[in-house]
Image (cartoon, rainbow, N blue to C red; front, side):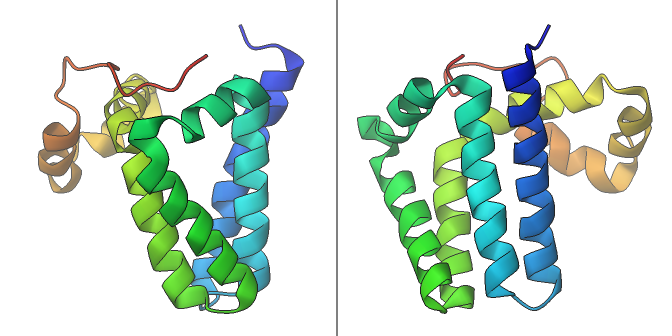
Length: 143
């Protein structure tokens, strides 16, 4: 069961993704991308705790991903939204790609999303990222 702080963190993370996607939809709008980043980072901090988030981002194996994500964030704020977005996406992939199988396994258990994820168009790609029996693993976020 999630306590109130974690529920707020999950909500902020979701809002961060929403603002980020709106920023992309509106041709890399600097304000929406920046808001998405701030909401996402604060949501992660609230969900797993500030110290755990700092430890995650500052692990030696995550230095490169953190540098790319942070550099992209700075470039977005500076006005170089397309280049900043590309750097952020690469950093996000470096930081969270090991966590994707856990997320996909969780999403497969949700009745509505299970039907969508089982469509042939998605199934082949998803099975490469997260095999049907797969779960988390070494790349999971600390809790």
